[in-house]
Length: 277
Image (cartoon, rainbow, N blue to C red; front, side, top):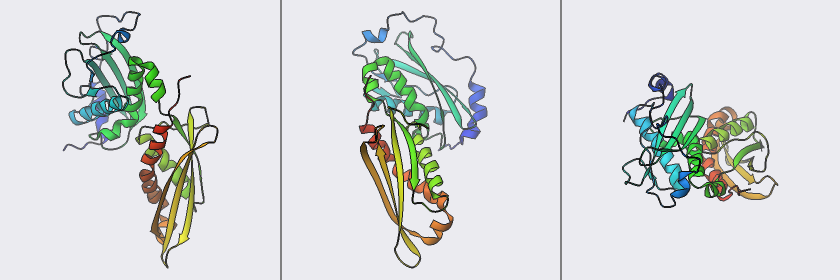
């Protein structure tokens, strides 16, 4: 399998990004009345490989978008549709690890129904759809909002604020905060710097106990709360850890802990949906 780093994709992506291909610049204009409102029963959405990326990353990004649409109960795939399927054309540019994407949703006749854009930091193997989730999820969410705005509002994930870590020695707290933010973004969650009504807070607590001459039992608890401080759930992790690791390798340890915690925190966020105003 072809493996490329995002840095290596830069020249390829920028070279491919001239004027957006049709239907980003459709010949026909969308009428003022949203035609999506006339499509209560459509044949799903087909998501072809993205323009502006090599083959494998182009397919991986398309699959990430299709997967995000399916999570929002919109039938979507990267293969063939049917005569009534909508088509979501994608364009991606990558520069210095930051990606910009544009999407154009068109009907079977090529008439533009909606256009949306997204931008995010992207890290990882570009041939893996999971790498693109931070870019694909908000883009798909915007498209869902165009197709069925009430459902999209009800299903929107809250942003997450890292509310600090206590009990970690040395630079462990900072390392855990930074690593958790990275893994939560990779899992498709937006990181917020300040509290807000649509922001949940994640606070970490570290506890270390003796487990032998050269070993300690490390326990990390992530408490998740809503904007009013009400408990939404928690994620607990504990393992024996060599003393030398606790003393010298917090960066690596924090990365592993945060990576193992992110899915549990996302699951809590999935259950805490922002309600329509």
